[in-house]
Length: 306
Image (cartoon, rainbow, N blue to C red; front, side, top):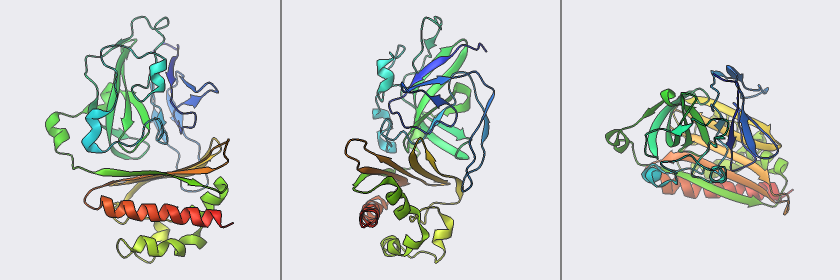
């Protein structure tokens, strides 16, 4: 591999890019390294070491505004660019991830694939098989790399050989499901919102809301780092809770479920935005949607009472 760099533009300044770094110009520069190691926090987080290549291997699961969740029934409808390399401006949209400087990589080209492509990816971050939507496939210095978006929101990249492209028959067998996604605008500080979501003393306030779905075990709060729990998750595979780039982010991954909570603040209005993504839900989507809207309203009430 050559040590030259490939520039990847992102649509949003705030991203959890555990395998890449971000400059003040909102461009990600991917360096030639052989492995990455994530930062270890004191609670609910483990070190992750994974091989990486020159042209990606970044992980941005909280890029929910740039690449929002996609219900499986709609995966073919995501915007893409086919038959040519994306411009730098186009990498600031939902249609692409990777911008290649053709002066530095004159032989770079697109692969003979029509986007989007549904695929699976064995994620070293969530420790499970992820369903992804491939929206770019490129060959750069004889290395084939794909850019993709996660069904549950956010984006990433990998070598082509690290993903499995699904046939139409395989894609059609995937159970139809939906994601809950909503932004709550709260007149409180991010710290107050964080406390409402996570402090154990607030657990009882959420108990009645959560039990409206089905009875919970008395120790349900011991199984999660937030005052929310969906009983049909399966076993937990990974968890993340921390402050990154001055914003609070929680992501819990289970065998059958992912929940994401991103707390940011609008610098102009000073209002706090709580972005919530949970799913996938199947037959109980409408019930869980109503519950999560109540849950978010309760977070808002607790946060604003101070």
